[in-house]
Amino acid sequence: MRPLSLRFQSVKNVPNPPDPGKSSPPSPLRQKQIPANIVKVAFFLFLLAAMTLAPLHGADLSDLTYENSGDEIIIIRCSSSATGSLVIPSAIEGIPVTSIAGFAFGSSNLLTQVTISSPDTFIGNQALGVTESCGPVSYTHLTLPT
Image 1: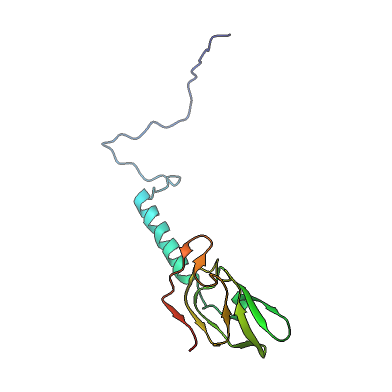
Image 2: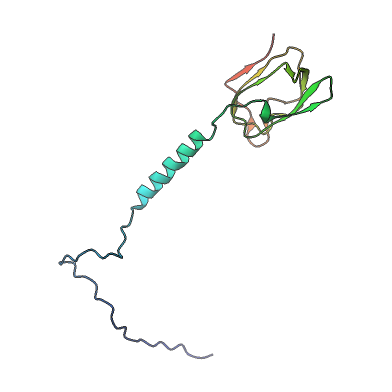
C-alpha cells in the first residue's frame, strides 16, 4: 500500500476575502441567499393553493364506470378523482340505473355527498361505505330515495 501524499500549490489571481470592517461594492456575480424558512413557507403556500384549486368541477356521470346491458345500468366504479357531490340519476341514456356494485366507491374518498335518485336502485355490499385505502367513508350527506 502506498502512502498518501498531498501537494499544495499556490493559486494566482484569486482575490483576498473582504475585510469584515470594510464595505465592498456588490459583485455582479454575487447572488442573494433566500432564507430557508421563506422557501418553506412559499412551498407550503404553493401546495395549499394547488390542493384548493385542484377540484375545479364537481363529480358527474363522466366519473362513473357502468355496464349497459340494454335494459339496465349497473354502476361498477366511481373514479378516484371524483370530488364534491355526485348525483346518481335514476336513468342514464334513458335506461334505468338498477344497481350499484359492491365496493363501487372504494377509491372515491374525495366525495363529500352522494345522492341516489331512484328508490329501485340496489346498493351492493359496502358500495358506499369503505374506501380501499382510507377505511370508512365520511360523507357529509348521503341522500337515499324514499
